[in-house]
Length: 506
Image (spheres, one colour):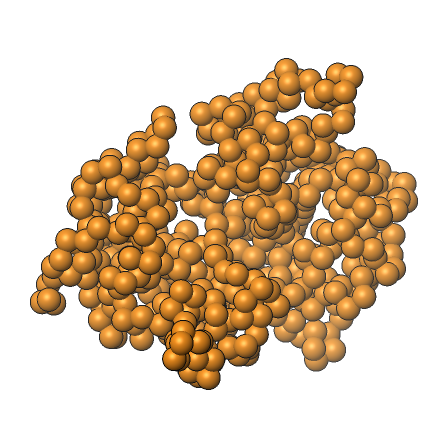
């Protein structure tokens, strides 16, 4: 295979599902030693195209060529045997098995009479784990690992074969900054050895840092390929969604109402301590900080998932105790969780049932749920939030990430909450849907909702928040108004600069 021959290419791929043409004659290629980004909004066809390449789906039309050889990917194992390795965004690990067994699943080294060669298995696995600089070993049960470390196990699978091309699907979604550095080193090493890398991510800063070319899909069709060094974020975004986005800071200044939620001296063991803040009607308060700062744990306490060890919660000026999510819901507090698929949705249920799940008891007519009332609620919030789905019967698991997030938000809005908490509102969502979610948050604030937004993305908190609470090691370091905050003072606050040396916590 010459240097000018793609490591793999897909030509004229067509894939149709009932009522949807997911891929419409898409062609795509990756060269040896190239990092090629595949971008597009959720629902643009990226995952479907990669599932065709990975043997999960069979194309209706088109062909796949690996090197110079036409290939039929009848299954994921066949794709892997041809050197195509898929590292999924959604973890596909067996939690009850060890790290080594997961990495070499289906390909365990054998001794005589078919016995597993455990010594060889553990040695090979630990050699791979050493490259990834992780702190667990081959014998560790996957179920005992954090989500971030489970993602590293997924990545380790790519290093077990003589890969022609490796597909990374949102690989950094659950990684820390230190783990991202290791991942990018792994990608650089694969690139240096002539492996073609297909990199799928919504994170523009990563795309412009590590890729050579960018190809864009929109509505199941190929929209073009550009050299990364010769383009910019705005041009790629327009190629993806066909319009410009408003990426400015929040400068909406509408009249704020009374204090809805007030927290005084709230603590929860070692997770966070002496936390005090308030949220007014019509206000968006953003919580920003590094992983482990305590932001999500505060939200879980307000929603009744954790018991505080000290402090007071007041709603509309009255002290209240929240012992469970049922208590929180009854008091008008709703939580859109960070993990929408694992905690916010039942993926095997339809859109209507997901949206009305918290209020099923209130919708009963005798012993049965009033279907007409459920459909009316779904229709109302589908239109209000512009949820794109063929109808209420569509399984939530089949929706794009942005539309799934809107289902979760609609579920809680239909309960008419006093306080809406949104944890990582746009994680894993494309730039177009991200802009829609941001606009929705601002619109809800303008309608009088009191909103808490927890985010790890600085542009996001700057864009949607009226005030920003900066946290470090379980403490509020400072609260900024949108007028006074800068990127520099926000980074200093969440990094604890000045705090460790004895500076006063604001």
